[in-house]
Length: 346
Image 1 (tube, rainbow, N blue to C red):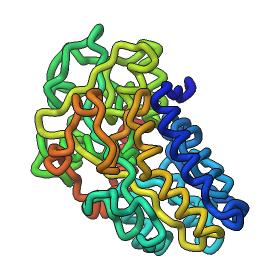
Image 2 (cartoon, helix red, strand yellow; image 1 turned 120 degrees about the vertical axis):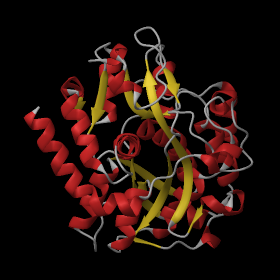
Image 3 (cartoon, rainbow, N blue to C red; image 1 turned 180 degrees about the vertical axis):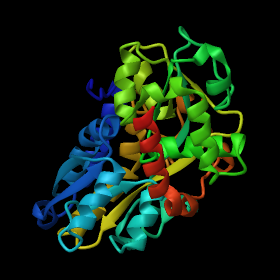
């Protein structure tokens, strides 16, 4: 992965945030360290480079630990009284499981100086929303036409053999599959219709791989031309100089708020709050909104860039498609097994 470059303006904003936090009392500046789970790839790169200096200036050592949300859950479930992470980074699907199993705890908003900068929708009782991932379809305009939506990927021969999918363990994938279940079946839980769809189009089974990061690599190598992703993934591909565009599905773009959660049993709660506060600060989000990450800022003092507004505006956030994660979580294990069996047999 290439480095997360800061332009001159972005570096100035970040430096200003560091300078402000450097005014903290000396007593607070040697308080400890924390381990923060972060999604691998562009998230890991961005958070390590942008948040580490801010957290350091607040007096804490930050270790970024890359892990998919499912892997984060597995690790804290394995040792809930001595969690592998102080904070977790999750979308609602895994967040709901973490809450149900008592793996995370409610936060004290009074310990976050930037809490008031978040709209109420982003003030989660189990942690702040740091961005909203808008999902849809990435495509290479030099290889395929712009898809109208998910139906197109199965019915238009222009996409045959050029689309990659991932399994039901991926939030991005499962949101697309619930949309396909609405299109080809009776509703978001009618996965039999989706499994039949893949059986009827076996060419789509040949490009089922393990993760979006793997798809990004295949896309760069020209081995695939289409995959399900977030706008951040397309921004990353463009930053690498690749031909990449984002298509909003005609049935609506699935969206997933991303929250930082405080692990139950965290060994350094104060450091965890400093990390959360840094992530929702104007200093950090003014940089994270820039290419190559282009994360949608939840701090309302942060203006959207033209690049982000080309995908979604603040007024559109409420109208995005927000999946029913209770329904998904209830069925997910069964869906994973059924799809894995289908792929293995294909």
